[in-house]
Length: 349
Image 1 (cartoon, one colour):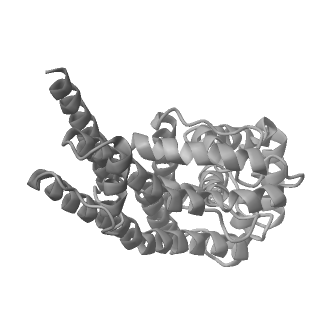
Image 2: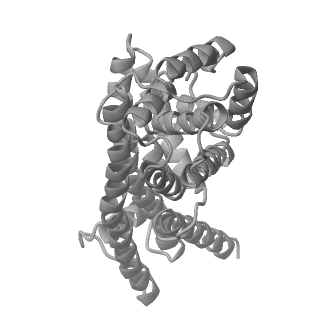
């Protein structure tokens, strides 16, 4: 009776391990909804600690960025390996519960079935053979899921980075919100321009892809000085600066872009905060508390716009207060994401 009870417990434990792994894969790549998958979070966070320990040895940001650039690809490749490992141990318990021999033989049967080697097969009864075939099917399914979604991940990455690169071309490598605003004015796009609709769509896609495929947030830009987080901050700051300080008819597309961006960065930030209580590694970040725009930074930006001939609101103090109010809706999310992804230093205004 004791043996039957232990066998039943082993069968249940093995079935649970297999079931939770398959469910993790489905929730990660098939379910069209942003859900935090605990098993995946453990894998990603464990690998991140290893890379953080290596990156902290770098003396410059470029050296640390080079190390962390490998983190997301390595974590993504490691994910199916962990899935297969958990499935292998789960089925080992199942074979042991079905009386296929000691744990060593059951482990060989499991890996032979999972990797479709055929070197070791069950010998007791039909149920064990059914389990063997089901394990072979699951092994192929798990690998196929990841491989089939790799193009989706890299397509989303390419679309994201296209906008980041375009921003750098328009505002320069050391871009700031006022520099982007000056470019918009010179290009006669300050009042109305198609860029706000494009950026609004970019923010909407960021929210969808970076919560349903969270590892995408950690794929770094091809150039060390670029980051999707700093690009988001640049666009939002430019919109907030125009709304608060520039005396021009308000573009509804710009207002919607600011709203979409604010919602996007806050939801992505909230996802990672709620996902196994993810915390940024302070030792790797370039961000400092002093990077928030101060009154003097706003005055400098106001003066630059004035010298460029941009029509401004006459009350600079009221414009500063309005800018602070608009920025307060997204600044904490931007600060969190910048630290989490080890983004380059964000210039104030």
